[in-house]
Length: 364
Image (cartoon, one colour):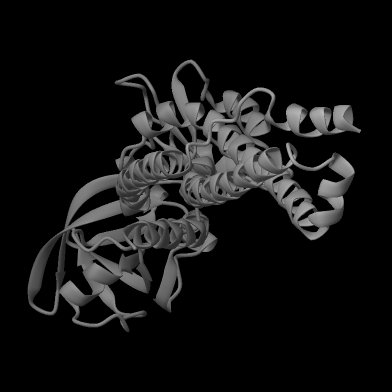
């Protein structure tokens, strides 16, 4: 029951990770402290020529509206941000490319900021004072950050330099192509880390897959031991009867039993094949996890906030659930082996089968 609950939890986490929008996302972040950031102008020019990317330049801000004053986080970015990060629009829209080009004071609020400042998410078209200047609110997005009042604005207006960037890859723009293309703006693999978030998100599904396959392997093993024990009993019975009957007479008297035994052997062989196939699939999946270690080590919230916090925190939770699942499976395996070996004493003598058929033929 506990194992089923843990497997269900792993399945739910795998579905949430699949729906969270990490597919084809590649994050590039400095691996050396103190690296100079990239200017928004250079990034925008590169993005127009190559592929879609976004960034987030965070800085503190103060907002004023409806006789209220609040501390917030002003995030300078580009018009691709909401689409690449897969954030849901609750009202209006994200600021446009025109706002970027014209350096208009357009701002998009997250849901937390909208309710804290205005008490509603339906505020598109209103104005907001940010650091004493009037900005037009274009819309409200759901970025899952319940702790911070986030204001998304054109980076050309907010200023600053971007440390990390997020790239949206597809079949055309592979990871190797992206890494090579980014060298033209000074992003080199010896100074930056390339973190494939899609790979990390896939690990949720892989953990669930290994969990249920390992559980099924134990169930198949239990079936193999039970079936093997029954076959050993049949062999002992035939071995006792062979002293009294010739092999041909043994077949004549116990034809149906022989057929059942042969079917049992076929089923046993099938069970062993299934268990080996499951084991090989588990091994193949686990061997790919060695590349996840540096990814999880480099993964921090950084400039992309709760998008990465969700992945980091739930990856840890998924790991805890996975190892609890494996421990329960190993305990179940030990119980099955001890129970079956103690109950049936499945120790087959070397010549059990050979003596059954060999001596019968000698008698004839």
